Image 1: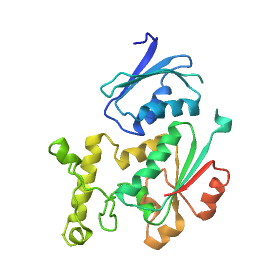
Image 2: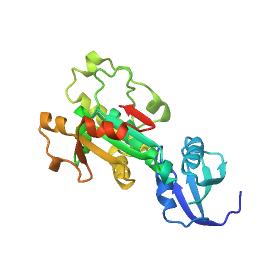
Image 3: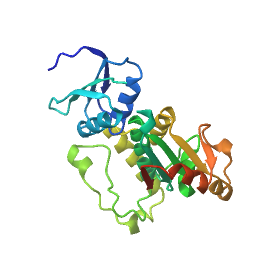
Image 4: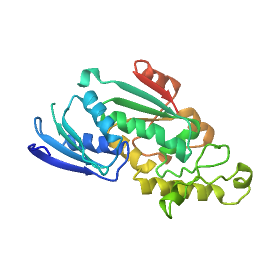
Length: 80
Length: 170
């Protein structure tokens, strides 16, 4: 478990593609540059999708964890 | 980022529930990645711009469509009911049943409704363009559509798609 200075937590449990990335995008509007968003998902597809999302948007995926039992946790730093 | 945003141009030509998903999923996903996105709704895809989406699904002519039950044990839900077209096409109300089974199964799995995905597209500023010619042919007016819809023709879509990185016909 990582100890990030999380500004906001977004729970996307139970949501399927493309909602985790869509909701993440919307949540990024609510934090400032340099702050960290924590996103929790139960969609296994969100592991590769969040990787791709970060590459495309340029935000920094600081950490992504497969915590088992279909729980995935992401820490994203807003870069712009 | 904004100077070099990738661009996605989609044509949505089908209005059934199963075919309504791909354009809205791709459009909202791309918009979430800061892409510039437009969907051109033409022919049977045009009713997806109506204020209330009434898309259904037909097993007829859809031989690969799995018939799943949205209730019961996991094994029961995962079972693919082998219902031949000859049978399904002759049972009155079969299409509305198939539609409600698909909607229920999607909901159980956490898939957003087509309406919700369209709302996301609107919020993420996806351009939604209705085909003028189809409106004339099928008798739609702009008032039938959500207010975010724009109206245009082939040239409108093509001028958008001319420098798109990804163009798809759905």
